[in-house]
Image 1 (cartoon, one colour):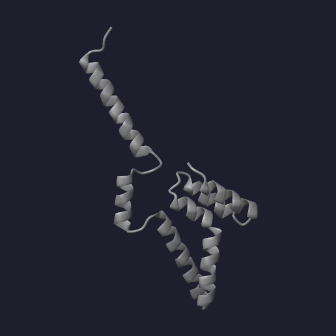
Image 2 (cartoon, rainbow, N blue to C red):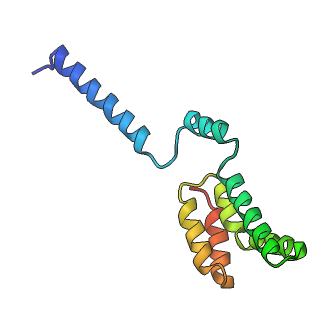
Image 3 (cartoon, rainbow, N blue to C red):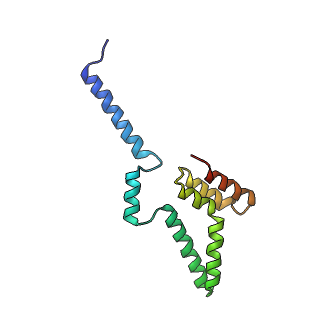
Length: 123
């Protein structure tokens, strides 16, 4: 039995609603939304992460009254979180998981290498 025009329209409407829901609830924002977020704040997630490292390093250097320690700490943190920075820079879907893994197990050499490998692979 062929479908009526009303049934066809209803099916198309359901497909459109599902497509919109997938777009809204997907893990990666659409390029348009991502651009609006970047334009509204002026920085992306990787820039925000590096800015956070700078603030932490400055704060530690200020507390210890030594700018050299703050600069050294910044470079150490950048090296330690290099896999997370790579994941954020490549806009990987699981960049948060890579960050958490890097945060918790990056102090072991094998954990750091695994997180860097994970960040370097394709999604």
